[in-house]
Length: 558
Ligand SMILES: Nc1ncnc2c1ncn2[C@@H]1O[C@H](COP(=O)(O)OP(=O)(O)O)[C@@H](O)[C@H]1O
Ligand SMILES: O=COP(=O)(O)O
Ligand SMILES: [Mg+2]
Image (cartoon, rainbow, N blue to C red; front, side, top):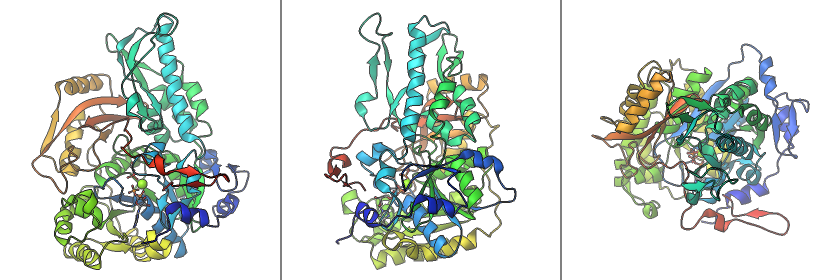
C-alpha cells in the first residue's frame, strides 16, 4: 500500500533543538545535560523543589491481549499526547526505553509508529543515552563481586546451590539462559551453574524504575538478595558492599531522558522493564517529573491490561502515591480477530465472525479497569490500514451496545490530528470523580494476593502452587516479606498462563511454578507457565533487515 516506514518518516522529520523542547517546560540549560542536539537528561534534583499544588491529570494507556506484533499502545500514547497538545493542553508523554531484545528480535523498536513517534527513533531504539548499559553493568558488577567473595573464602557462608542472582545482557540470547562458569581450575574462580537474563528483567531495572531519588535507589539496591546461606539467611548486595558502586554507575542514568514527538510534544523516555517478566512501567522519577511540568501526562504500561495496567496500579501507583485519572484501552481489529481464533497470517482478511468472537477479551479488560480498579476508561480502536469499515463499525457498535466508551484513533496514519476524538473523550473522562481501588490488600498472605489477581483480573477459578513454591512462600513470609506487592510473570498472549487460551478463557487455574523476592525493587515475583527471563531470537531476526550506509544513515529499524 506504499506506506512510508517508521524510520523514513522519522528521518524526514525536522526535529527541534532539544533546548527549545526543554524551554516548553521552563527548563534552562542549567537544568539539563545535553546529549547532542536532540536528547537531554533532566536533573532529578529539580523534583526536590516541587511546586506544591501542581496536579497534572495522569492518563494510562493499556490494551487488550496483543498479537506478537503489538497493538499500538506506545503509538497511541504518543498520538493522543500530540492531539492534546493540538488542543492547547500542556502535555508530556512518559514512556519506557526500548530494549535491544525486541529491536533485533520480533517486535522491533518501542518509539511508536507512523506519524506518532518519539524521535530521534534510531538513537532511542539503540544506545539512547546508555541507561541500559549502565543498568547491565551495575547488575553484573554485583554478580562479579558475589563470585569474587566466594572465590576469596566465602566469609558470609553463601550456599553455592542457593545463589539467586543472575548476570544480564540486553539481547535475546537463549544460549546464555543456562551456563556453567568459573571453569578452568584454581585461579579461575569457583565453577558453578549460572545464567543470563535480559537486562530489562534485572531487579536493578525494577529498583531503578521504582526509586524516588538516588539515595532511595542506593538503599533499594543494597536490599537486593543475591543468595542464601545453608540455613536460609539472605545475603544482600549491602552484605557484599556492592551497593555504593552500583548506585554510582547509575548516577546519570537515573536522570530522565528528554526527547520529543514528531509534532514537538515533550517526552520523557526512561527505564524499561517488560510487563510479562517485570512490572512493565517507566520510571517513577520520570512520571513524577512529567506531572510536575505538565497539566496532562500520558503514560503506558506494557502488554495487556492483565499485566502492565495491573502492575502499574497495584505496584507503581500504590508505592509512588500516583492515581490515574483515566485509562485508554487500545484495541485493534487484528488482535480481536486473533483472540477470536484467526491465525497470524490471516489477520489481514475481513472476518466479522472472528472479530465478534474476540470481543469478550476486550470486555474483560474493560470490566477490570472500570469494576475492579474503579477507573474511567475509553476503548481506543487503533485503526490499521487494512481494517475494513465493516469491521470498525462492528467494534464501535458492540462497544456502544455494552455501554463502553469508544473512540476511533487514527494517530498512526495522521499523528495528533487523528487523535482528536480520543483526546476529547479523555478530557471528559479525567474530570470524572473516581476512587482508585487495588486488586488486593498488601497485608493479605502472599498466596491470597496471587489468587486475588488471578481470579479478579485473569478470570481464573484459582491458583495451583507447586510444593517448592509453597515452601518458598512460607520462607519469605517468615523472613518478613509477606506485605510486599506481587509482580506476576505471565504470558502476554492470554489472560491465563497458557498462551494458546485466547479470548476470555473460563474454568482454568493458573500454576505458579516459582516465587522469588525482589527485596530491592520491593515486590514478590510469581512466575507462571513458560515465561522466559531471557527470550530467544526468532528464525529470521529483525536484525537481518537493519543496516547502515556510508553516511551513517541507519535503515530497517521499525
Ligand atoms: N494503526 C497502526 N497501523 C499500522 N501499524 C501500527 C499501528 N499502530 C501501531 N503500529 C505498529 O505496530 C507495532 C506495535 O506498535 P506499538 O505502539 O509499539 O505497540 P505496543 O506498545 O502496544 O507494543 C509498531 O511497529 C507500530 O509501528
Ligand atoms: O512490556 C511490553 O511492552 P509493550 O506492550 O509496549 O511492547
Ligand atoms: Mg509499547
